[in-house]
Image (cartoon, rainbow, N blue to C red; front, side, top):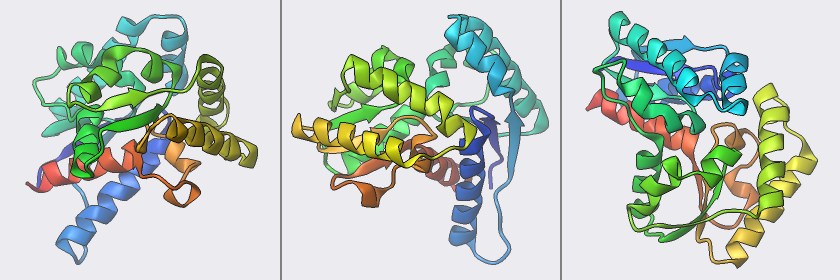
Length: 229
């Protein structure tokens, strides 16, 4: 079994989900008392969020790069960045480590293709929805992406940072997400990417009628597959 190096804390709410899913899947795969060999480096999310909001992305990348370097020295075999948004600085992180990084967008694109879909809606932070560091990797697999309108993107971003990252799940926010999802479906989305690792804490498959691609679950399962391969 390979050792998984997890860069977490962005937020710790979703990092806890990574830890749970990874260990449950290893136990399911190997049985008995088996659990995952993993090392978690949990950063201070307030420090990272300040870098995001002040457009100091390289500094954020340096912080995560140092985390990756520490994980390599601690014995990790590969790196998992437990957040969608911070894949924006994956090139900066990669400069600090020789370990491979399992990209969340690549794993998600593979799952979309496995289900035979060609057009999906994307929900996430404003950075993930509006910039190309994430969407390009999906589109490169011949998958079309739809995103909410500007006002909806702002509201979704506020819900993520002001509620979900603080462990709050509010029913009115759940209903809002469901409305946005339905609008994307009307526009032609065959499925929806939950492109922020906290959204899966709020929206479940039973809430909607189209396939959901929960990136936390997909990424964690990809990490287990790589660890056990």
